[in-house]
Length: 540
Image (cartoon, rainbow, N blue to C red; front, side, top):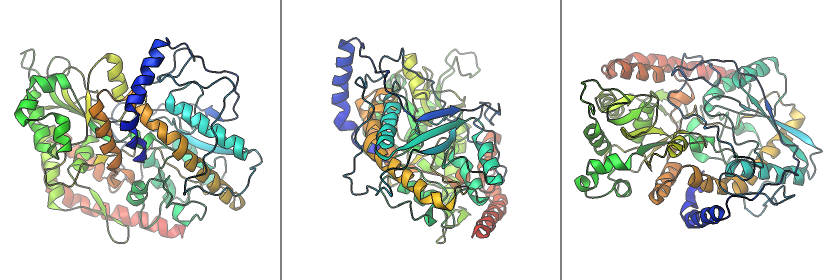
């Protein structure tokens, strides 16, 4: 999915000109309300569950290994257009316009198995509540640039092939999926919700192994090969991401920094260059990051008590940022052997990296506040915004910020790495409740949507970031680094042996006893992996 940012630099000046034109016109262009679409979104009720961080959760489900949901993830901003007059980026549809032509020139273009799908209703179950509600299956003619692009993608496909995309945003999606899988009732052709929910459904036999479906071309460029390689287990691939979806890209981790505080610390003089040059020169390291954070921390009001509102902090973080930093430093908690089977990384480097992270998080420099960068934070660990994430809220508040990758371990490390939370990422999964005579048709529709997304939705992702995320020209290159270096952690994706929770609890305690914790966890991880293998072998 790195293609989504490759064009950022080339379109930046064009977009600036576009913004000035829209501003000069007073934003008075109107969007046609005459066009009708069969693309539908169905809402369902909420269950009111809560997650471990005190936020209202998406579903409140806990895995078979006792894992808890990820912490400190980004919420939607609920942003809508003002009157339906124009989208927030100034893009409109001309009166009566409903779609673009379907592009079939790319070499990866799938061949439709039929010219007319006879009005088939392609039904998708998606995440309908919480901080990462699905935004990438159906769209709106009066929405933001991505929503509009999604709408136009669907219109083009529906008109060309005569099928209808129907999305059900279910606030109890995981319970619904579990129920349907258990009863064998077929209601949906595709499931697209929280990645961390999918492994349990795969082990129960509720979703297909994509490696065994001839109708899905996993080698195609419109599927994310990093996800494909990372989240498979024992050569079973139950879910994947790709150009059809962008929520995984918006879940990529980064560091926000406050330029004013950076300047107050004379950081450019200390290191002889600005933060963006540090990144490009390979010198944005954990040592630089933590040193600056510790310098920024101060009891600003002199009352002897450090609190969020009245004092200065080097870095804000949430529980899940243990993995944000660990992956940034080049470590993985769960690794794979030659047979694509998980095992616990018992190496000294990982434990040393965790020791450095825990020491930093438990220092006076850091605050686990669940909020995002403000006038008192130099740095904030978080994910990219999804239209309503932290950066959008910051822009609304008028707070300046910059974006850089998570620091690497040292200058010798080969590049930066961006952790993608499986809580944030939605994905593609195909339920086994589909009738055998429909499976080829459904796979083909998924292929057609994925390919068309590469041509219509993906190019608009760059514009979306520009309007909703980027404040400085230098941020463009930084976001490109994030998209090229996305990495998953199967301690969370596959809920492996409770190690995710163990590390969070260890940090909350004081961060000591890492070696002992790993020794105690090794058997639990091994047993967890063996249970997963047994379930998968039974599927065969």
